[in-house]
Each structure stands twice: as C-alpha cells, then as structure tokens.
Amino acid sequence: MELSRRIKTQPATVVHPWPPVFSEHSRVLILGTLPSPTSRAQGFYYGHPHNIFWPALATVLGVPEPKQDPGSRKAFVLAHDLALWDVLQQADITGASDASIANPVANRMRPLIEATCVKAVFTVGKTADKLYRELCVEEAGIESVYLPSTSPANRAQHATEEFRRRWLLVRDALAQGEAAHDALARDALVRGEVSP
Image (tube, rainbow, N blue to C red; front, side):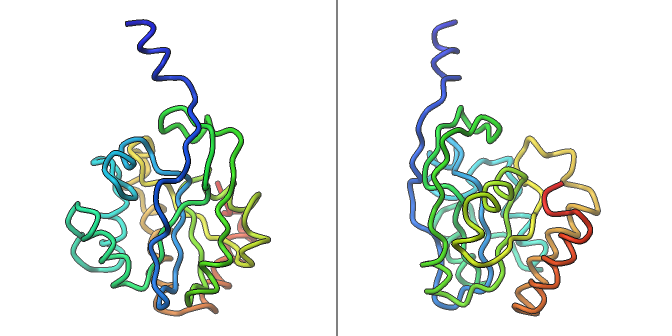
C-alpha cells in the first residue's frame, strides 16, 4: 500500500492531450493551466465533477449549463464565441497540483489569436495567470485578466461576490470587445489584481 501511494504522488510528465477549441469567430480566449488527471480521463477541459467552470461560465453568460459530454461542451464554447485552451503544452506535475509544476513548456498562443477574432485573454487560477505572464504574454501580444480558480480546491471562494465579479468580466469582454478588455487589464494592473 505504501508503494502504491508513493507511485501516485510521483511527478509525471504530462503532454497536453487535445487541441484548443476555437472558431474564426472566437472573441475571448479562456486559459487554464493543464488538464487534470480527471479531465484527461473524461476527454475534455474541466471534466472533474466538482469543478464549477461550466456552471460558473453558464451563469455569467445567462444561459443554461451544457450537458457534461465533450461534444456539448465544445458546442457551448463555440456558440458563445469563446476559445478554450491551456497555458501549458507540457509540464512535470504531481496529480492535479498546479503548485508542483516543474519544467513548463508553453503553448504558442499567437497562431490561435491570428486565426480568430480574439482580443481578450482570461486565465483561470493563479498558476495559469502567473505562467501566462511569464511564458506567453510577449508572444501572444495580449495581456491577460485573472479569473479565480473553479477547482474544488478553491471551493471557499466560489460563493463570494469577488468570484462572481471577476467571472462577469468574461461576459463584459464578449459584450464590449477589445476596448473593454484593455480597460479591464489596465484597471487590474493599477489595482494590483493581476494575480492576487
């Protein structure tokens, strides 16, 4: 039993298993860090049953939550002119612990941005935000706006007004376009809210 526990807690090199979800009409790019073991087993982004990404996104957009299958979730992303991906193409990671990430290799964002109408980039969670700023922002050419994590580990924050306020920024960026995103990014930098 002890050997089994040690094997499960050893870091593993994880290579991102899927391409980004986007269309030429996508206007907002939402980035996580890297799919969790549960998401990889489910075959799509934010697959853990206790991760509230899909309910949170549906709530701020004012629409019903998509069904749990990958096809329905992909259709939901595309129907709302969103793009979905992760900051990292590869990293060494222990389980789903973003804090354990080592040797990160970033995805190249510019080809996706150039193939779409993306003018706003949001990062989900502190680690995604930090890694995007360190590894991607220069290549991508767009500053990111931080969103609080939807993972079960961040459950205490999910019911807060700050959580809701930050996630409503996605809706605002879709409604108002590039000027709104630039203003949000500047405002976040001025107030020191880049990645609390």
